[in-house]
Image (tube, rainbow, N blue to C red; front, side, top):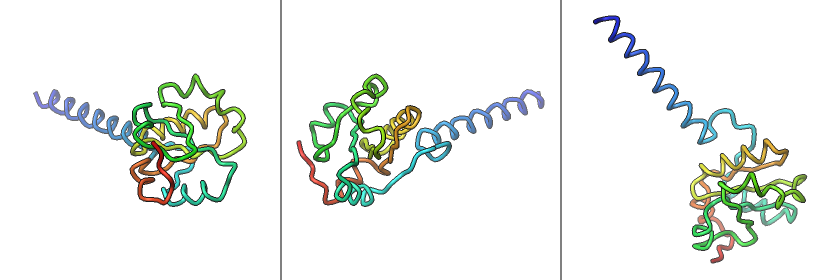
Amino acid sequence: MQKKNSFINILYYIAMAGILAYFAYTKGWILADFKFISPKQAEILIDEDKNVTLLDVRTVDEFKEGHIRGATLIPLGKLEKNLNKLAARKNTQIVVYCRSGSRSVAASRILKAHGFTPLNVKTGMIGLLGTDLEIVK
């Protein structure tokens, strides 16, 4: 009985470690080979660099509720099939945002894997609402 309980405990710890690793990966806390920027850094970059591309990876409905002026919408689920829309911007930085920062991590991983230079906005649109960037509906 003791061996069975020890084995179950080991499996429990392995499962918990796996869940923690998965969560950390989806948040970009581990194995992120792209840069993160704050909403304020995004604001400065968007204002000062006319070559930067602003990519919104939220849903169409979220985009319609309000987005940063000049943003291109490509929902995360359609990004990989629509990279051709960004092909002309391959040699520029792409500021990527979603609602809170999780989907943009996945989008940044896709972009980086295809040779783009993503800059993931920490806290996403939630953080960007606290800047002076113009929100349009």
